[in-house]
Image (cartoon, rainbow, N blue to C red):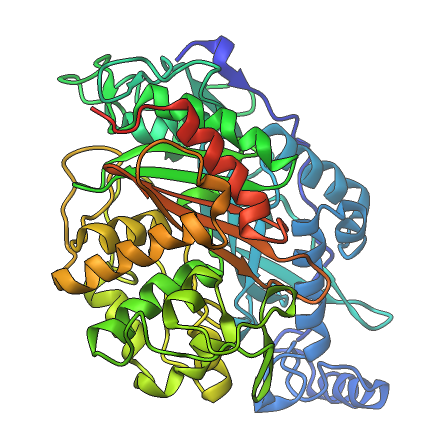
Length: 557
């Protein structure tokens, strides 16, 4: 590593000075003097009276005031309130200087400091030692985790302060040694789509945060660096405290990593999200026959990958799973009459979007118009844990997926009561999913078979699912097609090909607009889109899906 890659931290080099410890006199001192000292301590009400130390109440443990001061110091330090943290020490000016240079010089942001107050004990110098764990996020590299100890000393006038010394920041920080951050140059990761087209340019902004993960051991292996303990005088490295990043495998280094993504679909997905009008939104498109992801996009494109790691109530798109559960056991048929009133009370009042109603509606009409009250009215047809079992057994939801990037794989817990069961029938309550999950649900519904989604090849499939019966698949396809031709997904009706879809509107909170959802399939592709605070699925997610499917071939190669 060259010197030019070093970042130097201007730590204070002054020796730490501790106040002289209070406490016991020599054991061979005059007994009368010791007795007088004890009487004076008791009369003064000092916390050392009972045991000559910080355990003021005998066996009751450390003085609570000392522990509060320890927690407050760590909280101020972690929150960046460095003057406040320093003011809790015996040497505020020096403490503030060191705390500020320590975090700035090592590119540390928002440290997390956790005190183990249960392990506090008196140290030999008369201070109360409180162990703590420091988790220091180093920008762009990872988290440096270590343990240290916070010394607290009771003050002459009462109260407690942190007995300042460099070693409390880190046990090896001293007036002769400090820490230095070194970043190692690495080549940018090289990632291609399924046909070898490079995905490392501005046309695919949603992929930028994922490139290092997608590259794996190839293409430079991502950012690397280390926290080094160095000699203050000559800058020589004494030891490496923490290393970040994985060195690439020499056998594959420089070789582009190929993904399942399709450059045409990815570019179209990025463009389609412009229809979100600045709202947070995400999109996933994947192949029905094998689960390979063709496009994964987020708006905004930087930061959190909502498409695969988000946790959302899927709203009425979940009625695909609910319908599957009902159809599997013959609890309902598409032409059965299932009334759709404006309101239905199950512990609380449920209603349909815009309080619509469809009296005497068939189950097909309830599906295509996304009638909440009709689906909730059928809750008695399913056992309490049945919806979750169907989701897991046939759709793989809640099992552990190995996709090639971090994912959230869904949750359908057994409802706690009848109100929560009613909510779960319409994708609310504690049902959680994201666009990756709902695109996979759509693909499973129209093919009958779950395929673990993938973005890169070669991952273990630890899921265990069963195929949906052919009759159920046929019914689901018919219901989704009718939703496009005569229901809430008519925004897609003019697209070429046989498109099926389901819209969704998911409540978030009383002070936020609903999230808008739409899932669709055409040919060998399933798509899912969510728009945060999009109000309705057809109105917010619909134009995004329409834009995507208008810009790509009817079927991928």
